[in-house]
Length: 395
Ligand code: ADP
Ligand code: MG
Image (cartoon, rainbow, N blue to C red; front, side, top):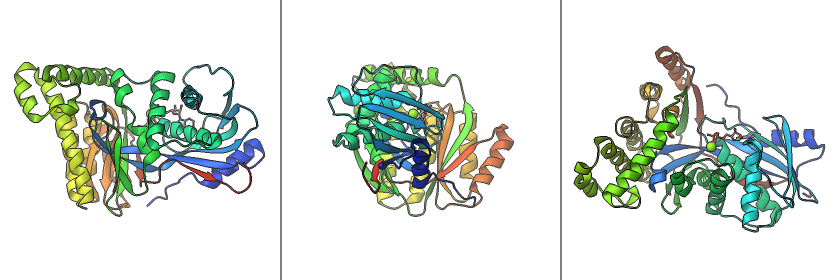
């Protein structure tokens, strides 16, 4: 098995020293995440079952005596600064706006902020659906909380991160602005070797042990279809249209009986969209039960079924996602595989009962042969959510 390189605490400390010529006072580490079950359920007030991964966004931090925030990004080789006591202005959306947006969201709620010097590094692949942006937001919020001497719960962090994305960065749709908070929640509240069942309706969450020894393989198809965002918008509209027809405020409140009764009043496509949401919520809860009951085979089978529902009922899969999940299922270590995230490109996830030596090569080879594309495969174990670690000496 190839050794997996993970960014270490010492590299972050060294990175800080190199840039600022002194030692950092504390570190903050927040992992990325992958969703094991429950897709397109979030903006319908349903259930999702993500886990943290072992790749993370880090900051090494030292408090300043003024309100200046000065951050050096190792990945972007650039430094940015702003003053939390001055007027915050939004510039173009770059890495830096995530951090400034966090300051803005906290200031709106009158949290006391102070300035700091920081070095920012990460090994969460960016833009691959592993939520590097949520990990960056959670990290930034934890830095401000540590320096300001206030506490934020994981749910507070999730809601603040959502405000940053929706209001400061202007990302996400109206539906998502109500429900799209689960990425920040899992990044903040995740636990080692556990997944989190999240109820998107009220953000209640429950940690559940992953089967011992299992590894999640994130299978980035290296495919992005330009129709993805149009299709995604259309799916949200179809879900809203279904709510009107069924007389519910959210598909969370719809039942199979309602759907059966309403079938004649809706186009077949809308019917199938709702069927996916209802069945995906059931599958996600069943997958959580499989974790509690320690039946990994059942969990894997539910993952496969979820993929087929996303493929045929919600129609957000694509040739590459179908191909890579089918190849993964053909490997003996694979318990189940499904697309994850919005679909039409992006990543799939497979659960392996052990870190099989040849899984990565096996999937890469067959996927290349069948699609001509080079996939990016990341094996992940769940690690602790966003945390501050104080270092020796004064901040
Ligand atoms: P995803 O969240 O799926 O990884 P996004 O496009 O939502 O993709 O977020 C990626 C953005 O988050 C990057 O373009 C960058 O602005 C910011 N980001 C993530 N990780 C880092 C990092 N290590 N250093 C600086 N910026 C980062
Ligand atoms: Mg993101």
